[in-house]
Length: 288
Image (cartoon, rainbow, N blue to C red; front, side):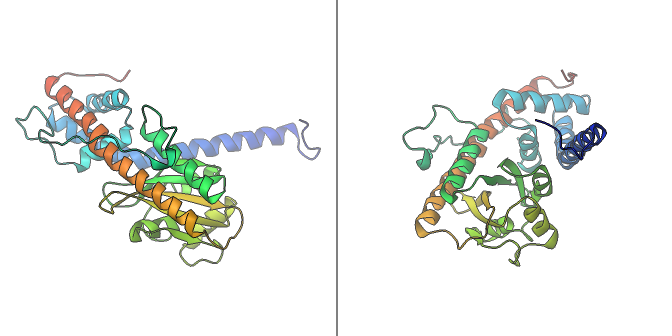
């Protein structure tokens, strides 16, 4: 592939360096968003298990995270928001009921033997994009604090879009509105729809999206635990009843699975963390 005549080697190098710096800034901003939550979890664990320092508390989080394939951010969120174990209890959740893993109806006939959170969210996104017939979209998961949605999966979207919408509240976006009202929301024309704040509208248009559709991921009780959104590169008239019904299935199955994962896999991880923490009181660990 030849370089355009109007671009010099120096200009190419400068553009490459600019892209590298932008990626580095995005990474730093992402770390800054998560750092306070993890620091709070470290403090709780340090005090609860009489750990010698914050590094040991982080190692405790990190090792439990790796063993059960649960992100450190998610684990820290649970440590901060779930009531702590009774001081003398060997188990954190001694009366917990264990439920079987729910299936995904839209994967009927080719369900994998084992699933993880990333795989299920990827399947939710893939099915949604297939129903809407587009290649752009993302999945967000609700924060336990109730402050908004955190992006966990995306495809076909620009890095700038992903950074801008890494965390959203319940105002100023279609996904926020869908989460607040627990209903599917269609935006037929991003440029004209009043649901967006102007910065959000500009970020969406800059990514090449001209219309979008958001589907809440809901539990059996109707609680919104996440959101999947599809973006289109053109305005459109909306989805058919058959498409909306198919997306209802995706939202219900995805939400039920997320709720199961939180109440089973994540709590198993916390239980393991509690057991290790009780045994290692006063022991210092270092990051590998």
